[in-house]
Each structure stands twice: as C-alpha cells, then as structure tokens.
Amino acid sequence: MDRKIVITGGAGFIGTHLAKMYKDLGDEVVVIDNLSTSTYSLTHPADTFVSFDLSSKSDMYKLDAL
Image (cartoon, rainbow, N blue to C red):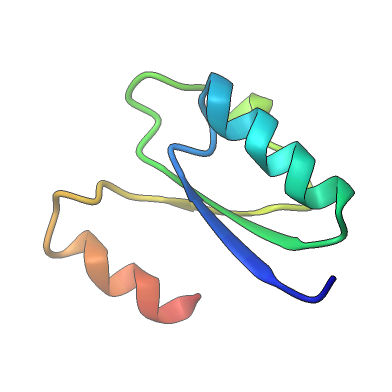
C-alpha cells in the first residue's frame, strides 16, 4: 500500500501497536506524541517522529513539515 498514516499518541501502548500494524501493511507511519505519558524508545526507528502537543497553537505549525 502507498499511504501515509499519522498516529497521534503513537508512542504509547495502543499507538505503538497501531504503528506496527500499519508498518507491516507497508504504509509510511508518522508518529505524533508529546511524550508526557509515553516513551520514545517504543517507537519504530523507521517511523517519522514528531514531538509536540496538539493543544499548543505554536506546536501546530510543525504539521506543515509533514
């Protein structure tokens, strides 16, 4: 498949499992997480990781890079 999947909270328990599932399907995965209750080390090294808080207006500009 040729999709880009964005997973918010992608460094948490459920998010990492979703990311793995999509990665196994051949999709490109972008993980968004503020790491307040999760761990970066759980993310897959091939995934694009963006650290920011969705409730922060200034952080929302980082989405343009995706």
